[in-house]
Amino acid sequence: MTQSNVENTPPAPKKRSKLIRNLPILIIVALVGGPAGLNYSGFCMSKGGWLSNEERIRISIASINNRRTIPIYVKGDTTYGIRNPQYVRYDSVDAFLESNPNCCNVSDWQYGGSHEFSPPSFLDRILGRRFSGVVDVSFAARYIDENGNQVTSNMKFPSIQTNCGKNPLK
Image (tube, rainbow, N blue to C red):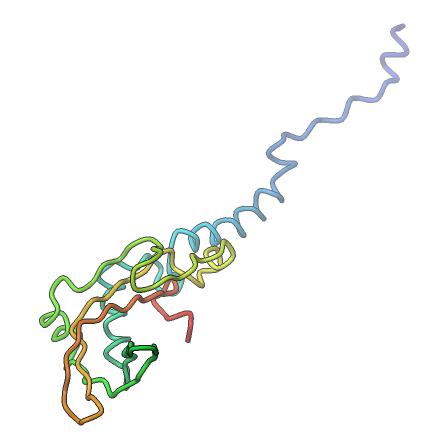
């Protein structure tokens, strides 16, 4: 090229950095992915944190203790059924724990045993609709039988919760 052609050539446009070009995409990913990732990890948005195992256990016990009836599985010679007698509540969550030490366990999804739940879907997890675990509560259930007598029977109740401790099945 000659000197005059170089002077007439417009300057090359400045290249924007990749970060600047991708900034809108990065902002969208952060705004959507951040809360979804927190929900997936079990974060409770309304509380601003994760529920401890103790909180999850106390919520499960309170839920059981607020019942009016309790399902009792009855197996006859040729039949199998469920009765729902009147449940005799404990005075408080603390009284429940005192009467049933080592009653509870918080674990990842389990199969078999006295219950079988399907694990939460990916969508349920990222929306915070299902916690990624089960609270198993084993306790001495007190209820009134068909003759009006108080009966005690050992029971195991699984409790599933949202990230904030609510029952997603209600």
